[in-house]
Length: 288
Image (cartoon, rainbow, N blue to C red):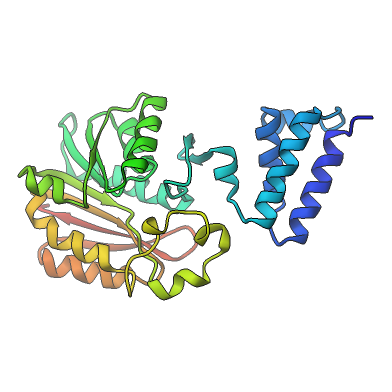
């Protein structure tokens, strides 16, 4: 006799809890395998479950519990700024804190640049394309370019841009080097670069360190290598009136802000804390 949906869900939630994982992952994976929304799941809890779906669901529950495979890599999606982005092992899973960076960039662009003017934005280390695509969709006046050194990551970002009909140009290259080589100037540089110090990688959750791309996590000995490289390159690519927006690791805000102040002594540099009270964003406004 076929088992009911609520029985399978109860087993999975309990199993995940025993293995130190969030119980909510059971709901997310079950909705994915049944191809229904959470509301539909709750309405159908007493329905019998399709045997094939149950088997695939239980396999994924075990992968998450035993192998620490992130739920997002099992479903192939992560929510960002109200949209479902495709993700795989070639890209970092977008985080909710990065939505705050996007919000901050959108707000500052409207304050800094006149309405109805095209604003050239570059997203450095785009990964899944979440930042670049969201900026392009939320403000059509932006001309957005996304750069990544990984061809595989760019493939995923391009798929996401196509999925949402976002007008974003993609370049494979190392940080701001493609712009410098093309002698190209932009108005906004936004980046969420790798910022975890080398000796902290080992202490990360296995869900992160064993599955997400290391090149998108590790920021050198002190976690600040990419900020140094970007800050050195910024004077060669920014116009006189410009915005720089970085996501940083907790505790790195003032150090990154100091780098920007040294490079741009007349800029307005701000360290902004996220919803969890951690220094998470650093903005530099030039020429206002």
